[in-house]
Image (cartoon, rainbow, N blue to C red; front, top):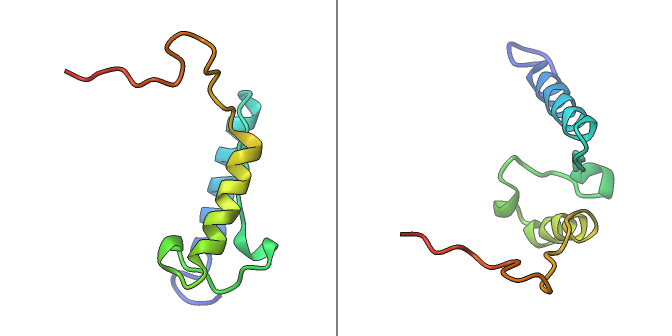
Length: 85
């Protein structure tokens, strides 16, 4: 892309990748999801307003199912919200 904002997406991508790398280095489990790499084209930065929002939601939910631990319901109080006063 050319023009005054030509490299802003490259800079943003690089910044996001540095964040992902830092999270993973600290023992986390981060990954940048690129919809276009999974065959989803033409998306904006407003994913849930795009025409293929349900397919994008499925992509995010699938990632979450594989990367986020489920709470251990056997532990006393696990998964319960604390009351706010």
